[in-house]
Length: 292
Ligand code: C5P
Image (cartoon, rainbow, N blue to C red):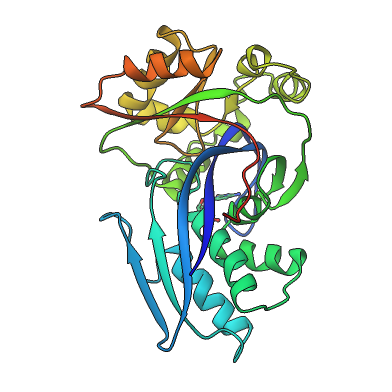
């Protein structure tokens, strides 16, 4: 059995810069891997595909990006990818805006390339990853990166300050990414700027500590999601009230994160969140490899 770790990400910055003819949006993002990951087990079997997952809400059919990654490789490398048993050990919240599905897809592409010695180059894997979804190429690469285009034009950022975060999700709340972008487009929000995003972007990229990072967080999708789902707006404010330096919704939600001064402060803020209404995690940012 080959085990691959599949880390989650947060968006420290997400700006919608254009509406594309293909229905997607052009973005400017700063993406950051965090220390919260699923584990993906891959084993060669005689049959075609067996999927086991410990999370009842995760589908094991073709709508799961890990399953689609197996199918994609079976199709792209005929005769070279045999049967696979896929074990998905889920720890990343589902529907949380932390790329939980995308990172599973990336881990399967990377893992099967090893398991079946397919010899796919990083750029070939990148192209396959984009066929699975806009966030999948970043999940293959990890670390801190500027992402443009649909999210696939990646530039690694080195020496970005590492931060301790509390991640929090209102229980029972998840958000459809497609709905969030569609609503943003329908409300024509791209034509109504609410912040000097250029100033924020430059500030974020030159931030040298968590305090500075906290001042320049930005997410355009908050404008539709936070307006619609009060629990997300309240949780984001609660993190600030409890002492976080800054807070933001990740991706299209429903998770929000708060930047803390230390891991100890993050633990104490997590302990003060109402457990019956909020699921929470303490994580650090930083690079985490796919290989266990
Ligand atoms: O690429 P992916 O399938 O992960 O995207 C999910 C949905 O998010 C898409 O159907 C699209 O509505 C929206 N999206 C977008 N522009 C992007 C990325 C995602 O409109 N750059």
